[in-house]
Image (cartoon, rainbow, N blue to C red; front, side, top):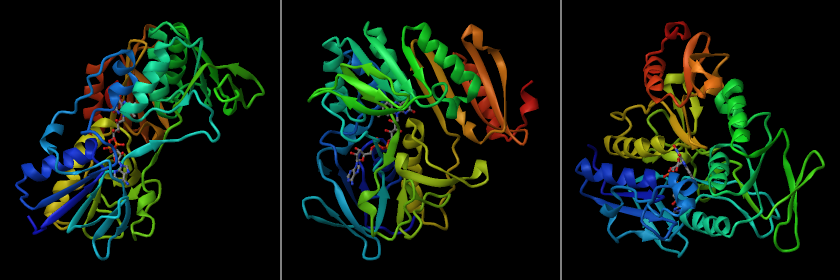
Length: 392
Ligand SMILES: Cc1cc2nc3c(=O)[nH]c(=O)nc-3n(C[C@H](O)[C@H](O)[C@H](O)COP(=O)(O)OP(=O)(O)OC[C@H]3O[C@@H](n4cnc5c(N)ncnc54)[C@H](O)[C@@H]3O)c2cc1C
């Protein structure tokens, strides 16, 4: 272990917490300065679009209580100087560090000029607000974006008995991740569960004097709307790194051991980090999944302690799960790299199947619908670098 007297962690959510715990577990006895923009202990975000909207407040993130009270809660880092090793917080305080973990995550994309009644969903406050709106029983709920947040919110709103229209720019929801076949199945699954799906169309604006009454679509149509939830993806929180000397391009660009390009003693983890994934020939990836933030926070912190010479590459297989109208949809690997895909288990018509994705005949990813055990086997094959034929 190299000698670092103080380590700053910016971002006190999943990856920041895991970095903190890993440092203490590894025996780091120097100062840890944790800075988090939110006012709470770190919490779990996945329930925010699922159980919490239905009234369940359980969002505890195990280990959060280990932080105690001695950290900068509700404070933003606004500037970083990597050559002198200090950062400035929004109240003007200066934090000096020997090593830095960047774990500032991401924030939702927003449509400009959105009136009242149009929401995004990232924080516990967002979820509480949305829960109250849904409980008021709006007649027309419009969800923008058929990704995992949009799909989950649409599913939850239907479970609450509300009328839901889902507007998605692609021909079928999540097609860029699920591929054509599974995305087509998902579109049908939404419709079978009472969602009106409007595909291949974008939202261009809103009607409503003060509060939203309708959304306007790029095909000229207008949809009535009493409540709108926009799930249009996220942007990494990197604004505060401007002028820091770090390379920022759709996230903090790192090497394969998560050291940020442009500084010796800075690592990044979670939704904000972009690094070359060795399973995929060094393709730069930024992964917005819980399991990635969970494991990468710890890995980045341990690499910082070990130093660049002794650090280990981070090459976990990306994996993700979502629940939509009772179906469990899981993905593994990087399906978008594939030039070929095939159903290897089950049948889409039966609502239980797995699709393997390959590039140059080598497995790169998988999608499983209600087939978690089969996915485990395919994941092993992806990590082993097996060929698509081997799954026959
Ligand atoms: C509603 C919802 C549902 C989800 N469901 C799933 C799911 O089912 N499965 C799954 O795999 N993933 C899911 N995710 C994604 C998962 O929660 C994220 O991948 C994970 O939270 C990323 O953790 P993180 O610590 O990297 O970033 P974040 O959780 O975004 O945390 C970053 C923290 O840094 C703080 N911060 C930002 N800028 C600054 C600054 N300048 N100074 C100080 N602090 C700062 C932020 O306020 C935030 O607290 C979901 C996300 C959401 C929002």
